[in-house]
Length: 354
Image 1 (tube, rainbow, N blue to C red):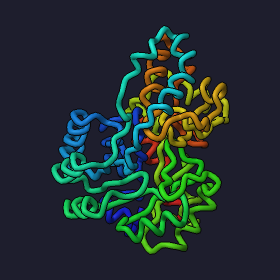
Image 2: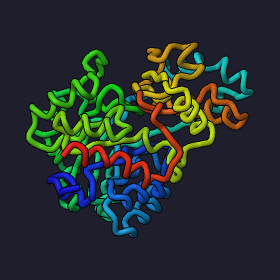
Image 3: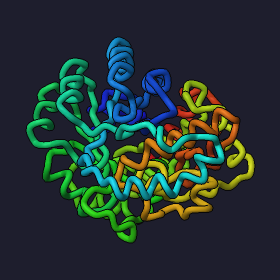
Image 4: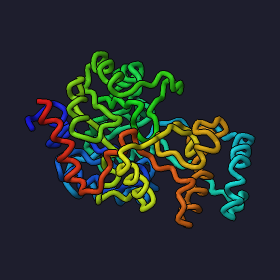
């Protein structure tokens, strides 16, 4: 396709970004997308430090364009009574699986961008660095830009897009309500302020001067074409890659997505039960029995250790009752194929839109 300002700046053939897929990928998928002309992404916030270093080394060594994605959430204050109530709510499920609630693993589950992450960016110099939940502190952002990175961040409202532009984002990812995984909101947690992509996108395009990348429910060339028609400079797609050959999606996860695709419909829900922050995925037993947005869940990401422990124990028994399979509303478009094929298929939408 002809060069555009965005894919020229990204140094990619297409202005197509593979969304970071926490828990479902490593560098193999990101490299395959970058080789095919898109921009592969690493979910840095979900990778332990040693693993992140290995994956960043693999990306840098390829000589290809790539993106490192981080979270910018504020670490919550410990709340022992709320944590105890959360564990009590889950205790019947622990008992069912033979787990002792006294041994729930500790840990936050997701790491915010910090000095260690900034040092990794300075060392490995990813060409693109993207953020969820806002932007890091001005000093950290300046350090990232000195390392030569092009900075992206997610906005779920026009207000957030304007804030990101004013605080140094080079481009904005407009995340529609259809998107899988965590909502990127950071100025307000009021879900009634969240809009679908094709309502949000043209409003953001009209409000800001920087390039706008469309994200949420785009899993086909037709979706890419529609986003471009509404002013998107590029597209970010995640769910479309979950069943790619190079993805690290678990067998249970892959089977659930392909079953949804085979049925021609996929029911998804926003839930706080996995991490404490609204995220979209396939419903499970917990969302049905406890309610998907149960206020008992501790603040993000403090709900994650107990929920992940429960999930892991059930999956060892071959059960997906407590699994959180993140995906967008267009999961019915998932298919098993090489990432290069998925990338080329999506990229046809750019050609059709020119």
